[in-house]
Image (cartoon, rainbow, N blue to C red; front, side):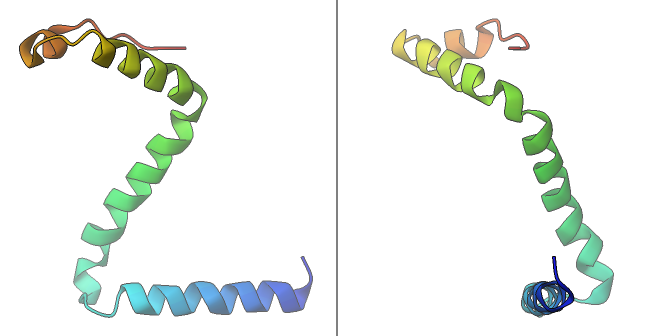
Length: 79
């Protein structure tokens, strides 16, 4: 990445950050940013098993089980 591209990217990121934090006080940033950081981390960690989980969810949904039975359906780690 050239210095010009890096500067342009950095400026863009800061402009987005300014937009996002416009309505929040500085003391509130942690309460806003932390959940998004956690969600992104979970997304990255679970990326490898996402297709298998979605397939299993469709399979369970196709069974037309009552809601109570779906809640008790034995989910396990899909790898």
